[in-house]
Image (tube, rainbow, N blue to C red):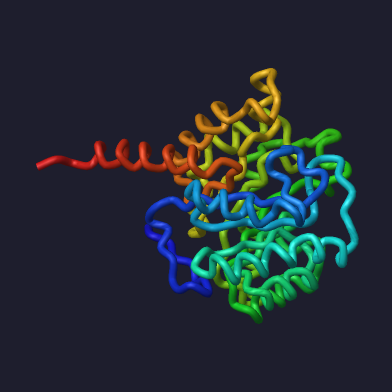
Length: 281
């Protein structure tokens, strides 16, 4: 099944996997090179695009484990210059805004953003889902267990895949009843999950295809990779690439990444692998 999303730039097919470049305009992102405050954000955005990012995901509120959120105005002031820069200099590149606050989402859409990426799936701000429905923009809904300040203290599941699936099934019903149509699902790797939970979800990613929505995978340089390899986020690109290959082979439609060039190479090789499986005359 080929999925499409409706963006400002037009109808976008997800037949070929999309690489979503991460641009964190925050002072406390877990991966230092992914941070881009005002003085360096424009160059970082241009670099992500030059390296092959199809879309850009701009965030001004870190949701890493243990983080404390800024005020809504602080969040907006961090991302507003980036959105203005992208709208002026790269208008053909779709921009996602990583926020769970409806006020920030509205201002971002007014500034030219094409979609909203919400780590709470609309559960932390009751105004978010109605806003997305009224705006008719694509919406990335992520599974989470707990808030960032405590989500990694002791995450527990009986059957993590079944529980995340159930969360999505219920949330999709609620979102669609409000008129949210273009929904992408993100299992929320690292958001209230142990390494075992994360790898279980990654291994069974194809289960979520039955929900009929595109799947986004965000594992880039996360602790499930670097802690498992006894290394650091800065040295976790090789492990990230391996995880991206497994995600693509299990049906991922969007990869949210710090390193677009490596991700695009993984996508290309996976496309050749897939083509080799097709029947030959």
